[in-house]
Length: 305
Image 1 (tube, rainbow, N blue to C red):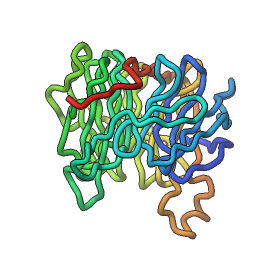
Image 2: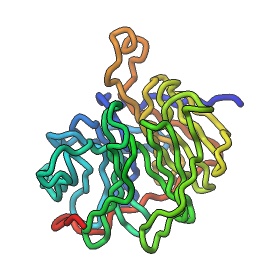
Image 3: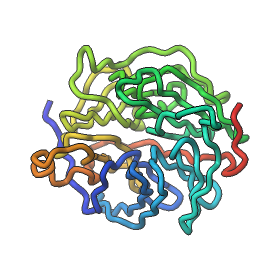
Image 4: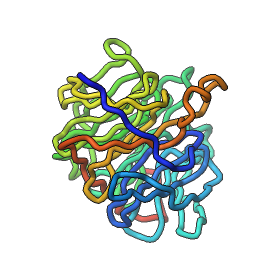
């Protein structure tokens, strides 16, 4: 298996870029610098990515989602926030409710019905502190899963009958039976256990139109393509060891975008990885991604179930 190579995009590097997502309506790429910035980029016809805008949020970020209204939904701080085009940030819901600490937001994504799922995760010494939250179309927020380590990546199969969850703390990727009509998760099966048979740590992931999983694997600095049964089929190398996420972008959804991080690198590691924190891109023959879905619920009046 010959590895493919992704090239760095000429965008301003982030400290910890994550969560790339393609906004098909605006024809823009969105991603976050988890230390507190929402980023926008343009994807050129040749697949190159360039900067468009940045908005500081003032709190840690896990994910950004496009909406059907004006503005964006953020998994940020201790819960959910709304971001307006002029940069105003509104608190939609704090998950702590004054009852104690909340594990940081780590990831997010929308199912085809327009529900938003957000993953959280604690420190390595806090296994089980992570959860997967769901915002329903009426603005109700529930904990869909608890007892996770770090919910770092969420994606759905082309038929919407499987939800894939990467837990970077447990170093697993689990496939859950999924009911898109109800937004509920059913029988889980561990698809990949990186602690037993694979090197690296799984982070963000994407699914292509054929149903293959593309998983950003930190450590070796790769994005790996797996079959729905967990067989490795291709490897995309990135010149940065801390790969954090991936998405298919561009009008044809044929550009694989990979986010990376420079956070925590030593001086020597930074010198060896000058593009760490940038986005990387590549085109892969005959591979097309799935169109993402916007959040279809309200941007105000969120309530805990």
